[in-house]
Image 1 (cartoon, helix red, strand yellow):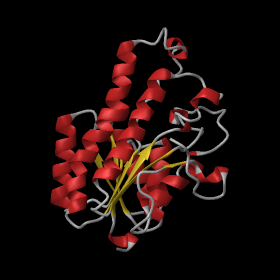
Image 2: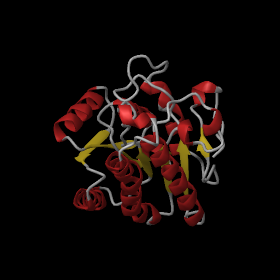
Image 3: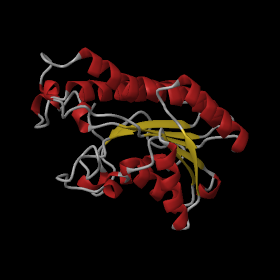
Image 4: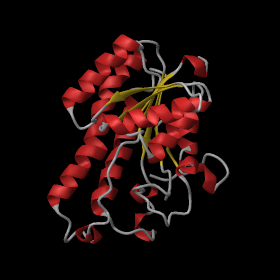
Length: 248
């Protein structure tokens, strides 16, 4: 299947990493569906990419809402009849809150809301769109995670504790493995990756890399050939000059 025939959905794609992923996927010939909770911001992103000659569409989407996901899915089915690529990028990181410096002070409500967006919402939109992949036996699902969620490296890493964010992304990694196991006979490849620390609203201006650099591995995983990696966790490609797996 050529890129020109593929429909790619990127959640939270009106800015930052999601916007960069959308641009790169569109530049190689995919029809990208931008999504955001705020319609004004999303339409502005669509207008900008369209002005660059890229083929994109837009629909409002709140991945934490059953009704919004259902409306979005119905629109996709009626408009395009399928989905080929899903990049689960939408997420939150409350790590800057003082109480997020320790498990002894973390607020359970903050953790609960973080899990709602970073884990349950990923499952919600993925459950909704997988049937639109199965109709033609093809799909690529990319879950945006973080090396901060690697259980192997947590004891020795230098990151802040950020328990709500870390534990939610550990949940994303778990979803990735379980989905990959369940979909291994459907030609739907499911993988997670860490985009690293980037100059985005979430990462701040002191980050060493751009969102465009952080998007590289997402595009690699979104365009895997049949029989490609399944249920794996990848680092940002710029670190190693190519795709390198991270230990869970």
